[in-house]
Amino acid sequence: MIPSVLPTYNRAPLEFVKGEGAWLTTADGRRFLDLGSGIAVNALGHAHPALVEALTSQAQNLWHVSNLYHIPQQQALADRLVEHTFADTVFFTNSGTEACELAVKMARKYFYDKGQPERVEIITFDGSFHGRSSAGIAAAGSEKMTKGFGPLLPGFVHLAFGDLDGVTDAITDKTAAIMIEPVQGEGGIRPVPDAELKALRAICDEHGLLLILDEVQCGVGRTGKLFAHEWAGIAPDIMMVAKGIGGGFPLGAVLASEEAASGMTAGTHGSTYGGNPLGCAVGCAVMDHVADAAFLAEVNRKAGLLRQKLEGLIADHPEVFEEVRGAGLMLGLKCKAANIDVVNAGYENELITVPAADNVIRLLPPLTLTDEDIAEAVSRLEKTATQIEAA
Image (cartoon, rainbow, N blue to C red):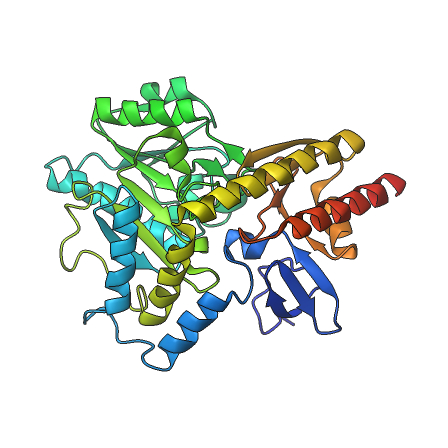
């Protein structure tokens, strides 16, 4: 008999009832160190006082009115995002998947309004993850994502990750945009080198294409800049944001330049819940923290400390771990042992990590974790590796 919750998840046998900072507690009192953050969502950790205050204060006043009306909290968050980024305008969604849908629509509508309706194709890259909607799985193109869900939405051209030479060859008179994650998350924590991001920006400029960046997982302070593309000194035309921007409350956004968004006029897109007062009140509180230079400096300091300790861990356990990669507090441990075995052994040591492709475990801790948390995390990874070696 099918369970009442559709069985599309292969869940770990864990159930948490409370969270605080970088820690989660089960009903029987076990405390787990959370290096997953709900897959890079809880940027400020669990039950951060500023987020609790923002949510509860707003909840006592107004939850939902719909986008038929002006929403002050939405305006406030949009103003913060415009102030701190390349963007001139913001559309709010409830998830990264919804942000992907709009990014695709926006790029195609841009060229339609320019009198080039044939320009609908978007170049994407193997190992990418852009959500699980029809557009998202078509954009990623992997068999794992698409098998059984045909016919797929047309208009995507897939290239190998890192195939910079192939990008120019793939451009035709149908090409509208290039879409890429500055750091692949699901694909195994694979950063795109700064030089390649600069080259993609230059290619888009040369050929009159739009550059769409998917910063759903790598954005909102995760890499030590507010958004990951800032390390390369470039700006996209359109950017997808979610996960960390809501700090645990469902919230996403599409940020765009005025030019790229020029086709999105009244009636061309909408969302019933997107940009609701609750989500945007929390988003404002998140931005008040992560956009602060001192906060980002601390993220970078802690990232350096964690990475240094992980390098030592790899040196001590070369049969379990192969390398550490990533940026900021978006790190991946490439495993020699099966990554799922490492994840499961970590559960036994009350440690949460997240599996990814390329036999990697993701370390996506709250950006607020302490030095003591880092030391404890590496100690539990050490126990996990020793346990695997002895198996």
